Length: 571
Image (tube, rainbow, N blue to C red; front, side, top):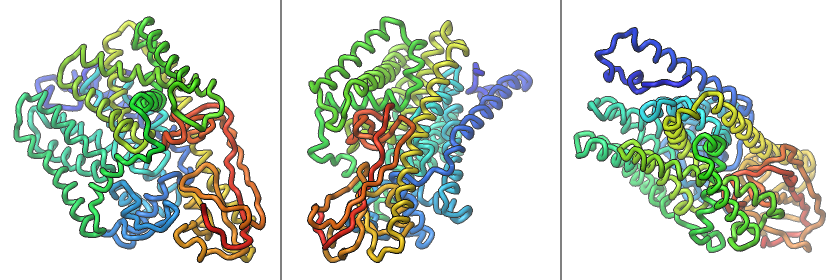
């Protein structure tokens, strides 16, 4: 299941003197591996094609609806997202290309969740198959690299949503492929294709712009001088500059610079010292890319593993005893501390792969992978406004390649039988976490339907706090989001207000303004969570907790249904 010269297979010019029949076995292996990876990807993701819209999916769907009506004005509408109405151009911090893709899907197949999820299977497939092809330039085990990417929890969770992250990374991967294959000898068509894909990646998610600098550094290290290839890198730069001026003209603010400022914004309550940020970052990296941890007995000597366990165990012990502050929400630090130690050990292993690979190879390839991983890690942990799985996602192709390169160097431990068990375990865990996230998404849709049943036929209007998928389904039932800027003038006695607990941008209503109160609880039976403060899980924001996901009994999703006695000011 491994190739020994995949680069030659994907670049015919590299084997121009080889006999055609000599290349046939390699091509058969590539076809077999490609079919295997495509089948595993579809088998893993198709069961989630009915998953409700979730978290920030709602913003991309809303922008797609606007694009269908006004194709050249993607963010020209108002939305209540931070508890009061704002222009969408001020709310969103992502460029619109993923929403344009979603609009295209909707024009062809409709606006249902299933239509969108099936449409977004294409970027997911492109990411995994692209990882396989890119890995063939760096390792003899491209199948291992692509499998590690596929079986990472961060991929499974992200690929079951319709946000921009997987699409951006798919474009990133194929831009890197065309650049590497078109660099030496120079192939202008490949370099131009890469430049277009780089621009598309940056206009799908701004982090995609980092690929320009990454490929510039790689090319300088590989070619040892500037060449005509450098001109192609100006295309994505020009595309971003054009987008900045275009949005400045449309909305009075350049959305590229606006997002750059927002990425650095951290409220005082969320600012942590470097040590705490680093521990959370190691936890997210280790948990999100769990195959690297499960394969660690094949990657490291026993003494190295013991050292990593000791360091991560001490870090978790310090957090559990309050010596290092990571979260105020966790109820039971014993179990959370054990998970934290496990994930931090994975993060240490991941960064150690970078160091060892650079030390061993000391070439353009190892530097390229190191800059990819370390640059993403530093941005996700120390630059972005919060640590989250979506920011860690760009690591997974490079980490998969580093794992495969490490196994190349340890052939005695690289048998398929020894690799299969940890990869299967990682896959089971990744699917479990994806199921838990889908269950949480479904609870918001269930809650909206249940609240609609309880209030149907009543004279009072229905309002709600909170956002994400809950907002989408509440509005689909005719409920309205609370705009606290005109709270008093909007409400009447007898109106209903729904307050979710596990959500964002919430507020409270004083008891004297409440005529009746009902608590609605929806159990979470999967014993795993991506967002649960009590368990320390904060996949979408480390504000919720220091773990990307957690196992254990999950608290029910709670919604409070209030009926107002008279108009109440929000607190």
